[in-house]
Length: 277
Image 1 (cartoon, rainbow, N blue to C red):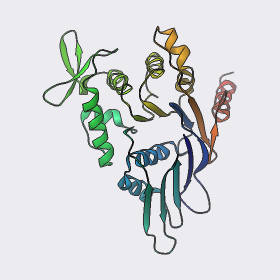
Image 2: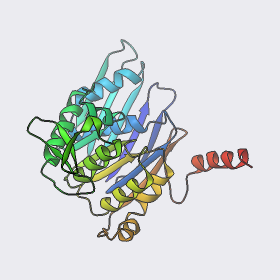
Image 3: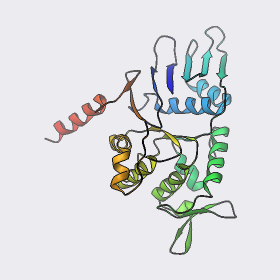
Image 4: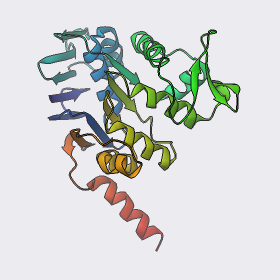
């Protein structure tokens, strides 16, 4: 599925532009403020036909004369702020609604402490996802939704409220179940703080997951492990699938496909080696 993006907070200079293809597993890397989170938010707005979210995000980033264009296949989202009066408008041309869930930055705080977020439909979607995954049992971590509407981890026969559970238990426990849904999962930095072994485990599951993933990350480990999902799955005795993996880096305002290594991240590692000599 081809995509085209053009994010221009002002008419003069683009924040991000380029084209690519969305596979079953998609990894996006880039420096802070390179447009990763914005891309995922607009992608969620397009998938779910959420014009209110598109307007909310655009109000925060667009100046007069700026615009946003995101096309995925035949579906199109366009927002612009008038040069004359500063009026903001968003148009969605979407033929069918996709089931999609945005695990935004800070989602762990929501999962553990049930805090509301500023995107109503994203919050509704997250609540719907948690309700849907409640039926899935087993997995690395035993979590369950109780009659009081709260999630717990079961440890040695005891129930531990999510607010007291390990962050890894909450993140991995939710994701290993969400991977079984027929939906888009948009993960905005969700994997970056996990122990490497947990990322290895999730990448193995992703090899045969029903969900399609778009993962924004700062971690070269996350990129390499998910790019090698088949070998990672086999190494853990899991079934290996045949999924199309696409890896991109948002750098200097452009979408660039990564084949072997990231040039920008390589420069940072080079600085490290020089500093530690």
